[in-house]
Image (cartoon, rainbow over all chains, first blue to last red; front, side, top):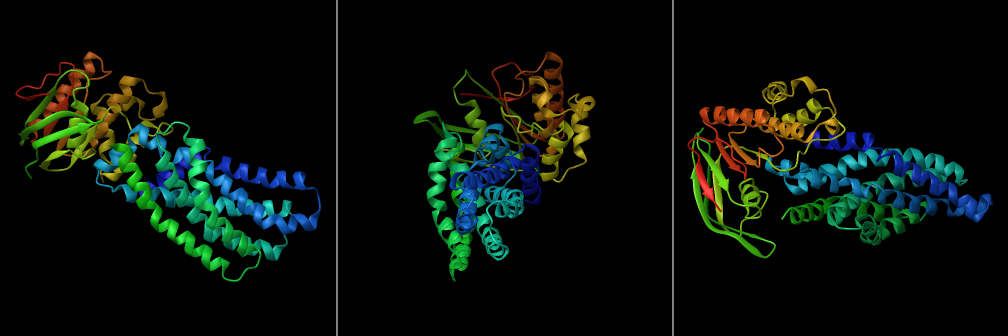
Amino acid sequence: MIALVWRELRRAWSSGGLVLPIAFFLLVAILFPFAVGPDGRLLARIGGGVIWAAALLAALLPVERLVTPDAESGVLDQLVVRGFSDSGIAAAKMLGHWLGFGPALLAATCVAAALLHVPGTALGTILIGLAVGTPGLAALGVATAALVSGLRGAGALAGLVMLPFAVPLLIFGAGATGGEPGAIKLLAAISLVLFAGCPFVAGAAMRMGRG
Amino acid sequence: MNPSLAFEDVTCLRGGRILFEGLSFALGRGEAGLVLGPNGVGKSSLIRIAAGLLAPLGGRVTGDGARALLSETAALDAERTLAGALGFWAGLDGRWDAVADALDAVGLADIADVPVRLLSTGQRRRAAFARVLASGAPVWLLDEPGNGLDTASVAMLEARIAAHRAGGGVVLVATHQPIALPGAREIAL
């Protein structure tokens, strides 16, 4: 199991699948000041929401490389022959994906917050919110990847499948940055539900895809 | 341990079509099964059912011993070296030390440090066979093992299968090319 998680992490690094989402995330954060103007107070007010929306979009980018290459190259087949369960493989993929994606996103958030004039105290809440919410986002990414794997136009479809399910994360994540008490707990609950449920969804999708 | 593989009255449905029905056979220690038939008749599906990747519509597959699968896909990470990519699988099987011997057996020891993406079709095929060797599994399921191999490599393959059987292993081969399997049970679809 550890070997599977480690393989995910290594592949994320070596394929550039990690750098691209982070670069994309920062780019979105850079675009906003250009779009709404250099008004520091306005930027600071919308900064938390912008960071969350950017994180959501960045999480969509690696979806296509999460499951499809392994399904096509026969890696999933070989794992199943060795007695790994589909949900177990999916759980390993989620953990590996988050380990690569989550901490890097948190680091990039510090940079994005500076660009958006987000004050230090708000940055703390945003970071806590992202740390709590990104596991759910990673799980959702793997489940989406498994669902759209092998379909034509999988990339575009992935957005349509994933973003609606990510709306609760966005609402409570952005709510927590706005200082809503209790939002962080609801965010944690949603994230936990996603991280606990998505392995089974992804596993079932991978099993169907094999048939 | 006595490795074995048996199909009992297995029916295979693919894409709304029955590919084969009521198929039964049993392979015991040192025995080989040779699945023959034209393209599209269900040879690969039979191998996938034997590997547990495909659920049969009816009947069941029983057997003893771990199974190793050689399918049409190599399942080796393209960006890693050949030894590294094989090492991942050997590690999962708990046999890190088997990689060098397996590469030597298929004649790829010289290029163990070459990235998988630079390998030719035949080399990739032999690398996938090396994974079967390294797995140490007593039951081999080989889907078109001769595909893309030159005559010398086919001879190597035949010799390895013979050695595996002599050691008590079970082999199920699906192929449309002639592969010498002395005393194999023919399973015609």
